[in-house]
Amino acid sequence: MLEEIKKKAKKAKDKPASFGPDINLKKFSLATKPMEKISKLSELSKERQKDASNIGIDVKEKQRSGSFFQLNHSVIYERTKQEGLEVMSVTEALKKYSWLKDYWWKAVAVDSDKYTAQAELKQTKGYFIRVLPGVKVRLPVQACLFMSQEGLAQNVHNIIIAEEGAELQIITGCAVASHLAKGLHIGVSEFFVKKNATIVFSMIHAWGPEVDVRPRTGAIVGENGTFVNNYICFKPVKSLQMYPTAYCIGKNSKARYHTLLYGTKLSYLDVGSRAVLKTKESRAEITARVVATDGSQIISRGHLVGEHKDVKAHLECRGLLLSEKAKIHAIPELEGKVEGCDLSHEAAVGKIREEELWYLMSRGFTEQEATSMIVRGFLDPEIIGLPPILKMQIKKVVESIIKGF
Amino acid sequence: MLQIQDLSVSVDGREILKNINLHIKKGERHVIFGPNASGKTTLAMTLIGIPTYKVTSGRIVFEDKDLTKLSIVERARLGIFLAFQNPPQIRGVKVGSLIQLLTKEKAESILQRVYLDENILTRELGVGFSGGEKKRLEIAQTFAIKPKLLILDEIDSGVDIESLRLIGSQINKFLKQNKVTLLAITHYGYILDYLDATKAHVMIKGRIACSGNPKKIWKQIAKRGYKWCEECLKR
Picture 1: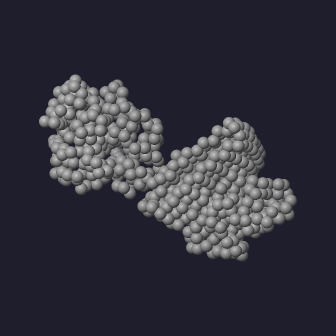
Picture 2: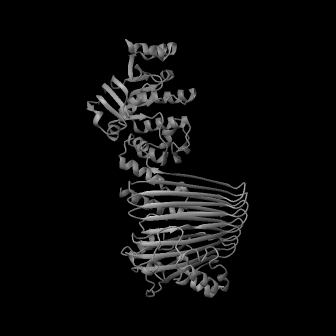
Picture 3: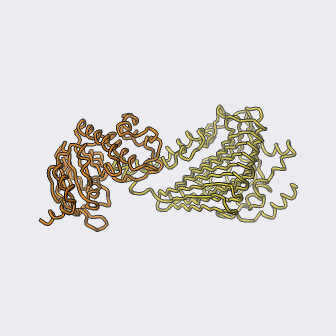
């Protein structure tokens, strides 16, 4: 079976992605020296600790039930603090569990494009997180994928499984060292939400202005299962393209997406959220709030597919343009395949209306203060319902953005 | 306190206000009556400095300062406040955070005075508000800011009689306690039952047609309608 996968990958190794600028993969190196393991996250250098905490990583691990840290191609730290929770390198997990190959490329197709193909043919680890049946992991698990080597390609493959009745929250932070000029991150993440299980996955990205990023995410949600995908990217990136897809295959399965993007400099962000509702009573909700400033371009996609008459889903995208040169393109798609499915969307993209600014200015605020109030509110994590653990983090970032106005 | 001298105003090249003259002394409470589209809101927007309202002649003097060249913010900081007829929806800005920025007073106690429920604090400005809620929030901001000159634009439209009575008496109390000068714009005279107006003006087709005792003027309008007021312009 694994040979079959490799064969498919080889066939797709030059296949461009459906969206986003094409990347010449040969320009990135795969050679890197192994990094030494650490025994706790606080052993990271001060600078690295700061980088990690900026993307939601709790270096002291007090408010976390497990941690995973991959630096370039080396898994330097893996730890679980709770019974029934497994956190380890996916490469180790594949050796440990022969059944894991049954999950390999089941939520994402290996031959989707050259990036998934590269993740298979030149995989550079990734994480395996699993919660045993009925186990409710109270504190989030944190995973950090970090690149510090110039011109490196990181091709990770993550597998996340919440067994029946399990509950899991994950915060994944991905970043590069600030000195890094060029890099490529390909991240395949496959989620399996079993019957009555819940996974809340939050991903915070902080790349660099010359880094290309191609995450490939799929989730299979079983009966009464819930998959929540939160995505936050406020830092510049050369190009980032992703279109995570949740397949609601069980009765009463739910998928929710919350996306907050702040495009700066010449960032190219093509970020979508897709939910395929296959069975009765499955539900999906997609919310995106995107702000584009400087010369950034944001394509905000959403795609709801209704394949059963008794499904309901809503998609909302709001975009705020803060510069003449910035662009936001909202592409909401509704695809009803059977009669009776209930799919809806609303999208609004524009500048801050002058009437709003004038109104606040008539209350004594300067134009800059009024703009800040509106942007702060637009990116308010409470309005789009992010988990409390992320709220403080996001508020901190938003305040630093506003200070720069 | 406020002197409007020979003021003409255009919007998109169309002249709306024509040679308006109006003097309001400190502590006076003036009412401007007028039918729809007579230029009342244009006057209010011009006074606070909204850029689309272009002054083509004349000037506005507030406490010896020529307002005509001042920005919206500068005017607001001098103590001029407009309670908007149609405040815009501002997504993201929560009522609670706005009020907190305007005053050190507790938001809850201000809301009580305008009979608004506390749960409005977490709502976004104007989003999903009823007509009455919009007006009450404008008055709540007035109480928070305590301006020197309060301009009320159609505070009585879209508000039921009972609410108008409650809010009207709170406004009256506020004006007297804080010695606030008032310019209230309205179609109707009901507001006179709650605000002790000192003087009234009638605006017709961008001009002041007459000025005088508020109750007497409203009695005439109620009896004969604004059409009759048009005759005065011909004199």
